[in-house]
Image 1: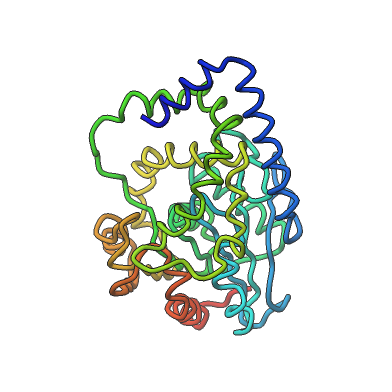
Image 2: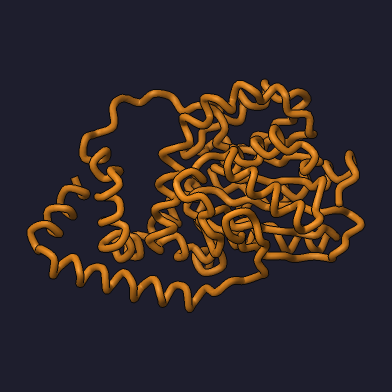
Length: 326
């Protein structure tokens, strides 16, 4: 009903209120971008460029680890959690902003809202960088992206580390309320994202950042280190909604082919993950990928890479001894 109240306020307040809200949104967006400028170089791909953050030796005798972030996030999230330890262990680390997130262009717009489309862009970027085959680590939404990369571009993937992966078709939970469907109608989505969504999102960001870690607490300084506010920009929020709405249909098709993945795979999940439950995603996936190793961490929630870093680093190290990566 919050959506209805927001729309009613905008309609009732007329053009003047909408213009004020749009001005506030532009101001907040400008301040966010000034506070969190690009943290690394860009790589050109078809339709634009992708932002990235790098760490570790280049070249590296141990190989390259590619970090792919989940929904409502950007490359700084996995890099802040894993980058220093992986770099210290001798790996070259490349964290990429998914299309439309961080400082990456959305490339093909709404058509970029599937793991397959994003995998094509990531593969092109890695080829341009001269990277591959590499160990590819995907968290949450990017679990679907990493598996799409392994399916469609196996030459780029030496191994998969899937952390709290969202990879299986989502169960039917009943009809979507009409007011949510209204909010996803393009004109309404456009209006909300460019007027009130950014200031409202800024207010709720600390609460949302804490919620995703439950039952653990978010590490001190997490929102700053992960540059989380970048998701509040209108174009990024729109990309995030498109990705979340489009994922179930994409997984209906993609999940039929998991048995074709040949890359050595480790799946790491927490048994207290209420966002991407292991019973619905990690466990069925482990049964489908030949030879996949499943690691279930007791008492751990969704942000495994931040709260159980050593388990993730160990998975990467084990994979690096099985295949030659570069």
